[in-house]
Image (cartoon, rainbow, N blue to C red):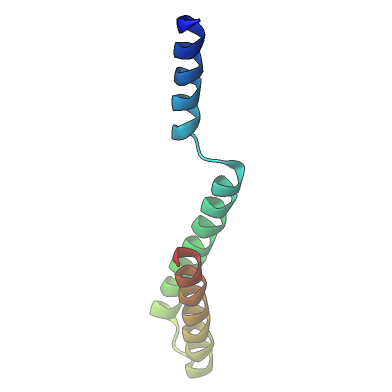
Length: 72
């Protein structure tokens, strides 16, 4: 009986360290937004057309809002 309890506890300990499928999906989505943000930042750094820069600045603000929403 004690061996079963120990086995049960060690199984629970393993599950605690592993993220759930929902957590993995959320992490992947956040990582995707972070990657898009880095690309937009790079594009903004080299953009010279004022209209294009404005579009990129808006995209950056939208991505920042998405990230803030994910964190909160």
